[in-house]
Every structure is written in C-alpha cells, then in structure tokens.
Length: 241
Image 1 (cartoon, rainbow, N blue to C red):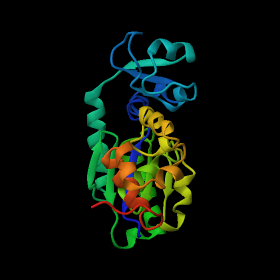
Image 2 (cartoon, helix red, strand yellow):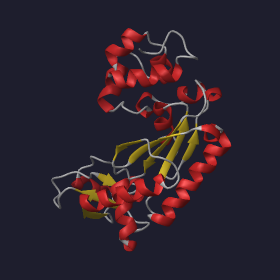
Image 3 (cartoon, rainbow, N blue to C red):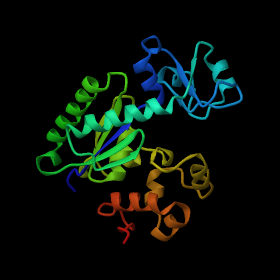
Image 4 (cartoon, one colour):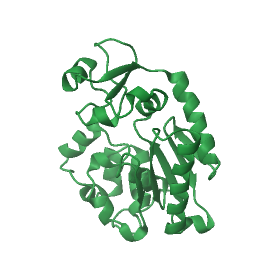
C-alpha cells in the first residue's frame, strides 16, 4: 500500500486563531466560549489550558477553578471562517486540497513521487512553512500521512501539537494496536463505554471482531475505516463493498 493521503488537523483551532490575532494571549491558557457566562462550556482550549485539564466541553465554572488565570474569549466565528479560507489557500499553494472535512481539517491526495516517504515528509514540512508565512506561526497543525484517509487522520492524533506522523504498511498492525479504541477517529466516550461493555478495551480486540459484530457495534464509517486499513494484514476482516 503506497502512501496516498496527507491529512491536516489544525490544533486547538479556535484558541490558536485567538492567540494569532491577540499577541498578549500567546503562551497563556485560553478558553473560547459561545457566550460570556459561567453556565456555558468551553468550545475550545489552548494547549496551555489543556495542561490544566481543560477540554472542549469543560464547564466554564470548572475551568476557572482548574485554572484561575485562564482568559475566556467569546467565539468569533466570522474570523475563524476567514482564517479557514486563508489556510485552504495556503495549503492549495503547495498541493491540491482534495476535501475540506471541517473548519479545522482537510485532506490531500498524494501522487507520483509524493507517495514516497521522504518526498511526502518534505511536502508536509513545506506546507507547515507555508502556513507560518501566509497565515501565522500560532495556527499550528498536525499532519498525518498514510495509505488511506482513515489512517492518515488517525496519525494526526498521535502527535500534537504541530505533529508529523507517517504510517506505512510495514508499521501495521503494531502501530494501531498501541492505541486505545478512543484514539481512533469516530469513537467517542459513549462508544468507548459501549465497547468496554462487550469486553473490547484494546484496538487489537476491536480489529479481531468478525465484520458483522463490528458493524453492530460501530457506525458504518468507522467499520469501513478499520476494515480497509487492516484487511490485507489481519484476519478475519475483509474490505467492505
């Protein structure tokens, strides 16, 4: 399986944009909220805030207790969209953006020499440099490079912030088995609890499921991703139609 996809995940996107446009917030804990009230939750947190345990969904009242010095900023979605378009343009100047997955995620297809590991890494570093020049150094991204979309996205979560991870066929399945089920894209807290109920607490156990059982427990999109990522290496999983 050659390297086919390069996936970009912009780290703590809303909070990073705020730190880019507000120099006094750089290096400090920042929480982005929908409205300025203690009864709401953070919708984004800078990595300085995450160091105190603050995450997306943390109640504002709790965030203030966990990090009294946190600065709360009311979300400015118009600005985040403007930055998103600038980021797409910056990446597009390096390689065609095949799909915009969300405001802070996009994927590109690798072709020709780009599918070679060293060339793919060179391209990824060039993209990061271009983003710094055209958008700003505080809007960082993690880049995952892999044989398919699912693995490339998974790779972006393996090193944050500002990560760069390559998953090659020779790395499978070991690199996936080191992860927890919740580390796979699409598996949230509720889904993780459901898997634990059935005794599935490792990715290896998840990948060893017969496809009908996997389809019963997981949404089709996740099942497809796991199946196509491991089908040539793991039995009894086979690619989905």
